Length: 528
Image (tube, rainbow, N blue to C red):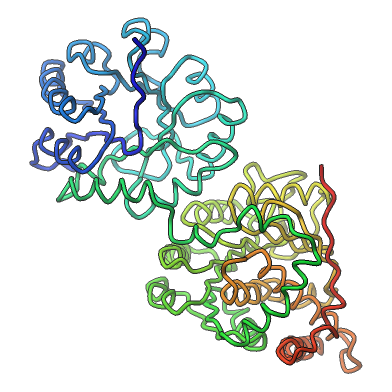
C-alpha cells in the first residue's frame, strides 16, 4: 500500500530545551499546535536517553494520530521503529539515507537535511520523500549550523530541483516566523518549483499560545505578502516600447498630482541633491536614515530608497527595519547597491539586504547589478569604488544577467551605463538616452533611484512602466540640460539639470510632452 500524500505546509520541529520549551509539557504544546493547524510533526531531542525518547515519542504519536498528522523522529531510526511512527528525518551527519530506507521500508517517510546543491542531488536521487532546506536565517535553536543560505540560496536549490525535475517535496527551516514566512514562501517560488511548506521551531514551541501561533503561521503560509499584489505580472513584462512610451506622460503627471513621499536613506554627500531632484520631478522628499521612523513614514503612501552609500552595522540594521516596514505596508522599495562589488563588506551587506526583504526595483551600475547575482554574473571584476565603470561583459550578456536577476528577485531591475537596461524578467529594454556629464557629478546615479521612487509610488501597479518613465524623464532632462548654451561643463550642468527636470515635468502636465518624449531611444535587446 503506497504511503499517503503528506501535507508539509506547516511542519513543526519540537525543541525540548529549557530555553525554548521552558517548563511547558511538550505533548501539551504539540497538541495545541495541532489544534492550530500544523500538518506534520518532527520530534527532535538530542540529549535525552533512548528510554525517554521512546516513551515521549509514543505519547506524541497517540496525539498526532488523533489529528491524522504524521510524526517523524529526528535522527533515531531505532526510536522510530520502537514508536511505530510514520518516519524519520536525518541530517548529513546521521545514518545514511539508503540504510534508513532499508530498515524502515519503502512506505516510511524519510526527510533529509540539505544546505547545498550536492546534498540536494544526493538526497533527491537517493529517494528522500522531502528535503529540509536551510538554514535560511540565523537561529539559536541549532548549533553547528554549516551555513546560512538565505532566500537566495533557497531559490538556487529550488531552481535546480525544477530544472532536474526531481520529484521531491521541500520545506525550508531556520529562523522562520510570522515576520518573514509569507515573504519567504512568495520570494522563493518560481520557474515551476515552490516550497511545499515551512518548518518552524521556536515560533511555535516558545509561543505563549501555540494554538494561536500555529493558526497565524498557517494563514501566512497560504497568503501572499502585502507587496506581492503590485509585483510585475507576466502580461506587463514583454510589451512593445511604443506601448510603454505612451504611458510616460500619464505617469509623470501622476507624480505631479500625487506628490508622493520619496523616503531616502542615503549618505550625507547625496542628501541635498536627492532632495532637490525629488522636488523638481514633483515628489515630496524626506531624508531619514533612522529605521524606527519608517513604520510611520510607510503609511504615507510613498516609496523607500535604500542607497547603500555608507555601510555600517548600525546603518544596515536601520535599512532592514525600514525595508520590513515598507514591505509590511505594501509600499514600493528601490534598492541601490552602491559599490556592491567593491569590498567583501559591501557584498555581504548586499546579500543581507536582498535576503532581508523584498525590493520592487534594484537599480545600479553594471558592476553593481552583476554583484547582486549568485556568483556575481558573467565577467565579474572587482569594482574600484562607486563609479559606474563598465563591466567586461557584452551588452547581450548584461541583458541576460539583468533579466535573470529580475526573474530571480521577481522585481524590476535597472542596470545603468552608456546604454541603460530595464527589465521585469521579460523583454530587456535598452535606453540610449543620457549624457556623459551624469557620470562626472557625484550622486547622479543615486538620484536616479530617487526619481524612480517617485514614479513607482505614483503608479504602483505597473512598476515596469513607472520605472521606465522615471529613467526617461531623468536621462532626457540631462540631455536637454547639457545642450543649453549656459552649460560649459559638469559644474554648470547641475543647476541646469535641476531646471530641466522641472521643465520636462511641467511640459508633461501641460500636455506638451512631445518636445522631450520624442527624444526617447528605447528598444528591445535581441536575446534568444
